[in-house]
Image (cartoon, rainbow, N blue to C red; front, side):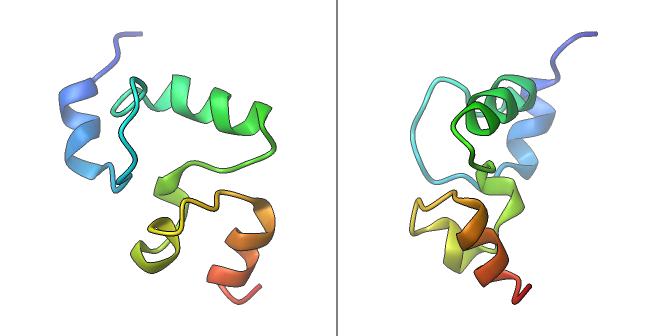
Length: 63
């Protein structure tokens, strides 16, 4: 499977600068290994906090 980085970047809402931006597989693996979720799982207001925890996810979506 080829990475569609340029296509992924169109939908990436991450405001943090890193080498995984647009490479969803790498980003997801990285964050899950740290017990986090990537920016694309969060609404813009929560994404800006850079808190990628499962707890912040639940709080952001009122779960």
